Image 1 (tube, one colour):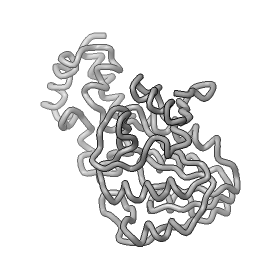
Image 2 (cartoon, one colour; image 1 turned 180 degrees about the vertical axis):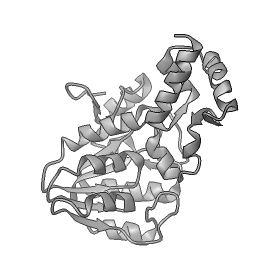
Image 3 (spheres, helix red, strand yellow; image 1 turned 120 degrees about the horizontal axis):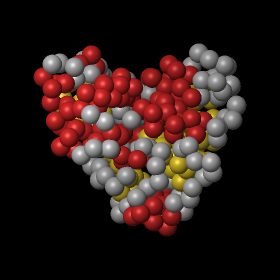
Length: 260
C-alpha cells in the first residue's frame, strides 16, 4: 500500500474510531511506527487530523468532552465486549453498572432487553435504559462530575450498598498481574469495589489495552472477580494470574468461552 492509499485508510479509521494511537495505526496498516509518523505529518500540516501525545484524532472531535472522546477510542472492541456480555443477561435480571465507556456500550446493547432493574452512578447509563421496555433504573446520588456525568462519594457508595443484584459489572482502568484490578482515580476505585461486592456474579469488562498497566489505586484482587470479558486473549503473565485466581475469561467474538 503506497502512502496516498495509507492516507485514505488513516482517515477512514479515524472516521470509525475518532481517536487512534500511532501504535494502533502501525499495527492495523502493517507498517513501522516511523512510516506512520511520516504519513501522519502532512495530514497534520494540512489540518486533516489533529496530533496529540502518541495519537491522532479528527479536528471536529477536539472540542468533545473527555468521556465522549473515550467512547470513540477502541469503540469496535468495546462494542464487541458489550455485545457478548449482553447475551449472558436475561430479561427481568438485576444489573449494577459503574461508570465507564465499556459499561456505557453495554447499556446500549441492553436496550433490547425487557424489565431490567438497573443500578448505576452513570447519568449516561441511566438515561440510556430508563425509558425503555419497562425497566426500573436507580441512580446513585451526589455531585455529578463534569468529565463523565457520574456521581461519586460517600452518598453514592451508601446508596448502591443497599442493593443485591444478579450481575455486577465494572469497567477496568488497568489489570496488573501482581496487584490486580486498578484504576487512576480514588473515588472511581472505591465505587467499583462496592459494585463488585453487591453482585452474585462479579464481572469486569475491558479491552486489551488495559492489560499489563499499573494504575494509581487498587480496586480489588483478581480473585474478587468471577468473570472477565475482553476483546483479545491476555498476555501470558496476566493470563496466568487470572487462571491462578480462578477467573473465567471470555474473549469477545470467540465461539466459546476461553479460560485464561
